[in-house]
Length: 117
Image 1 (cartoon, rainbow, N blue to C red):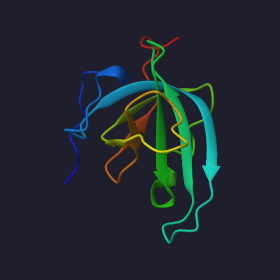
Image 2 (image 1 turned 90 degrees about the horizontal axis):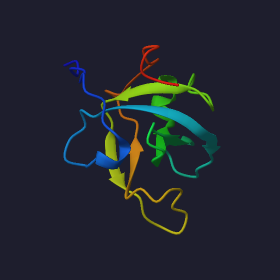
Image 3 (image 1 turned 90 degrees about the vertical axis):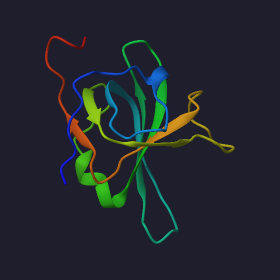
Image 4 (image 1 turned 135 degrees about the vertical axis):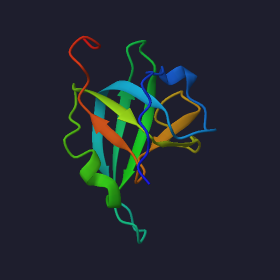
């Protein structure tokens, strides 16, 4: 079943883990591959920032890398339908209480020219 896209863009500071149908517009601040010894393989990871300057860590398992392979540092993207997981541990990348996890229903598109810098 296809996920319905949400028309309202949310700020990162408003994200809560009670749903996956969020829609955000973010700029890629950092991007790196994170090696893993686990069976699911390496992850592609990002620091994303919205227009308010709020940043969040984003992870993408190797299974879904095709969804974000054209997500480059300095570029704005609209990201829809993702999960939020608690951001914990010694290597917490941002002050945001959650991090984004790209899932099978995630949609990444270019923003309309009128909505970003």
